[in-house]
Image (cartoon, rainbow, N blue to C red):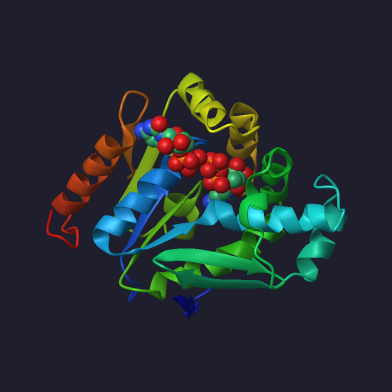
Length: 234
Ligand code: CDP
Ligand code: CDP
């Protein structure tokens, strides 16, 4: 079922926000798979902030703009409306009424998304959408690059999921997707606005030698220790 985005504060996380579990990490570390499972176990909404950057990048490319041309990207941004909602426990995003679907994960989007995501104006627009989810459902699990550092710095539930560069590149290759994950990491870590980095208070999990289930179990155990229990009581 599709539910409208509840909206929320744009500049600061309001104190009465629902619980937010922040999961950050580099490309193909397993963030989104882990976040989806953790959200399911908690009965929370799963939000991929990367999907928002991907959706806008898809729009930029669809309009024939060059991602490196700042003026062209900002001109597309000025003409773009985002509609966020939830469907079956996960966030959805429409860009000017259109759903990019699988087109948000093409090699072309992978090659351009980090350039688009580095523009502060783009980040500011999507930050509003991301914070709007703080009041959706009973809580959210949001994954990305700057969720624990910038989007929800006050949440006590922060994770940084990592894996060795070799393992991450191999995981993406196994998915059959063209993606220079290390190049994307370099761009994401070196940008000025909201770079990828571990929040000081994040629990760091190296998933190189762990299965998805083991990482999910670890996250749920740490959340339980902090008083956030899975819906099943597990
Ligand atoms: O899942 P994957 O690691 O392939 O990437 P993603 O989470 O879908 O994010 C795609 C890109 O969006 C990243 O490489 C970043 O450039 C950007 N992004 C960001 O800048 N900040 C976020 N919170 C999430 C994604
Ligand atoms: O969201 P992110 O790019 O960080 O990673 P993902 O899309 O969740 O995971 C990339 C691939 O690695 C998927 O095919 C996962 O099933 C796989 N994976 C894995 O093999 N072992 C893990 N511990 C985590 C993810």
